[in-house]
Each structure stands twice: as structure tokens, then as C-alpha cells.
Image 1: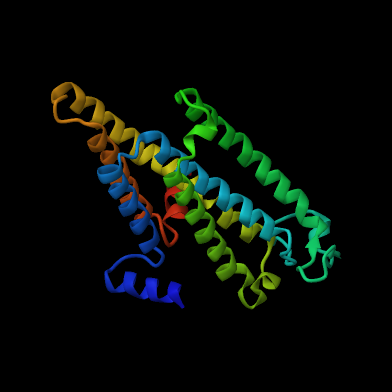
Image 2: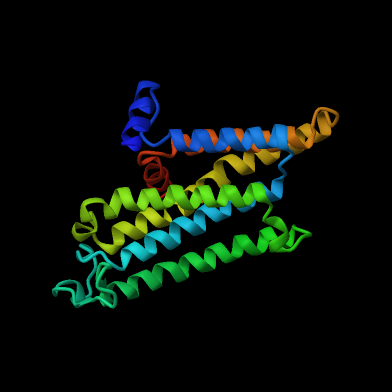
Length: 238
């Protein structure tokens, strides 16, 4: 019900469905930067946490989707799936799904580990020291919002029974595609602008100004990337 209300409000404002969530998130980030002195490290931690949480939750859901993958050539996708139900109150797990889930998650894990390594290499604090109450609440909010997405798209009315593991993995790994697009088309140009401004007018640049110079365009890009824009950008690049 709340999701339908958000989508109706977004359409009334001329925005894509689902765009209010990134607007609210980045508005909160901007408020945190201006009034609570949030810094670059905490913001990156929040963004990376969103990617991990979405991937893990949708990978778990992919285990219980019984439909075959249409464009997969393996013979196992043409046979009826064999369910495994270790706990009677939970949906059954399908063994044939595990291979494609592991393949996608390993590829994803290598990609993500590269960026995490870059992140940790420029941080002079341990991971535990990064988790302040503010970032902890932000990560918790991400967990809740992604769990709501999983419920709405796959678990409500047992709609997972009509879905394939590829559909769940596509939704779970979509934030990775958004991360790549935002990094290439927003973060890199913004960095060029910030570095140029640092030489031209260093007295204007403070930490809040620099962070807002990243957060605001990233938020705008994520609003635009809702409703299929990710696929449009990737197809254009291909």
C-alpha cells in the first residue's frame, strides 16, 4: 500500500516509479553532511552496504524460485525441479538453482572485493571503527527497505513460484550496474570538477561542499536510473 502511494506521488511529480526512495535517501545524506558532519568514509560505507545487502537477499530468494531460465542451455532446466524442504514452514529450495547463484555471486564477489580493497586502502581506521550509530542506523534502514523489496516482488502472494532464479539475481545485482554507471558518468566527472575548483578557488571548497558536490548528482543519477534506465545505458554501451 505504501509503495503504491509512493509511486502515485512520484508520477504526480513527473518522476519514475520508485524514485522517491533515492530522493529521500540522498536528502537524508545531505542533511547529515550539513548538520551532523558526516564524512566521505561513512557515505561510501553506506553505498557499499546497500550493494551487499541487496545481492545477498535476492540470492537467498533465488534459491526458492522453481521456474527454469529460458535462455539457459543446460538439460537440467528442461526437467521438473526437485524441491528440498529442510524446514516445513519455509518454501522449498531447488538444488539446480545453486550453480547459477554461485556463478553469479562469485563473479560479483570478485568485483566487489576489488572496490572494497580500494576503499580500505584509503581509510586509516578499522572497519569496526567506521560503524558509528549514524551509519549503523543507515545500514539498518537499507536492510529493512531491501527486505520490503524482496517481500513485495517475490514473497507476497507467493509470487516466487512463478519466477526464475535469473529474475531474482538480476534484481539483486542491479545495484552493481548502477554503481558502475554512477562511477563512470557521475563520480569521475565530479572529481574532475572538484579538483579543478580546488586549484581555481580553494577557499570556496570545504568538506561539506565537496561531499554535497558528489551526493547531489549521485542522487539525481539514481533517480534517473530507476524504471529500466540501467538496461538502456548498458545496451547503449554494448
